[in-house]
Image: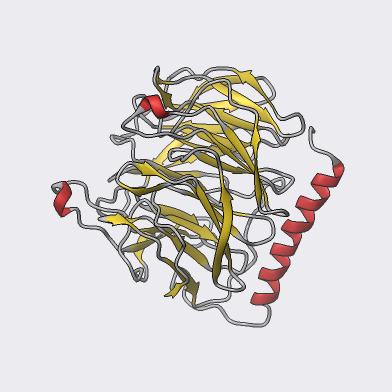
Length: 395
């Protein structure tokens, strides 16, 4: 393990606190229908943004960073949401505007932001990386990655390092990967994937390996990364039907991984290395996925890109997925609609079981935010796995 015992202790203490809060909230009360609840407005962000990142910090606040605020223009600003106050506050800015970046919560509580650029201008892709310290609400520059990247993936490994893989830059889609060590502020090359890919999804599996799937242009080829052996191997998935690079993916409480594109979904089982079809409801591009406190999945918003761009129907729809581990298999069911239609937004599970939805676009970028409050008292979350808090990957 590269992290110190002190860091491990702080992370364990923070996770224990989150679990305790959820247990206390649930104690002595009856649960109502899973997946149901209501939406309410909360304070607006200072900046309109879509395609940003949102990360739950160890102290319970949420950091949103970057994103587009108008057309292809990106913002360098970040903001913090305090669920206890229902308010946003400034969180500084980095040296360069960024979108297509990735944000990774480190084991010591800091946040690592990597890369970014414009999907329509690969020349703008950055190799830069930045660290946010929530104790001081300040940013510092980290060592640059060895390769400029946007629309890559970044996953926290069990040893505290961060695996960055793929993405695009002026040289096209990338197969390379590298690892960041927060203790030394240094990047080291890692084995390359078999296929170059960008806008793919990645998730850390319960055994510590990393799954990558989809993206353009590998499509239906999935790979696993073994950190101990520094090796990528193909895994099941050649029979999948992903046809879009607008993917979303998330680790489910049982260790499986759900991956969705516009109109197709599949669940990966790491034990058998197989995929099972799980078609999402309707046609939704640029939606958001989040795991609720009871283990169910929530898909929110998006838009139907089958219509001409000036007529995109932005959606306020919400769907709930009931995995077999949660209850008898029911698939996707309709949940309560959001107050505002939106796409390219973020959805973040808070420590008290509520969900914060922020930003996105409804024709133009939004600065609005809203909260989903379940109408039941959520049980303790079924994570972490080995101290790892699952993070949603947004596209």
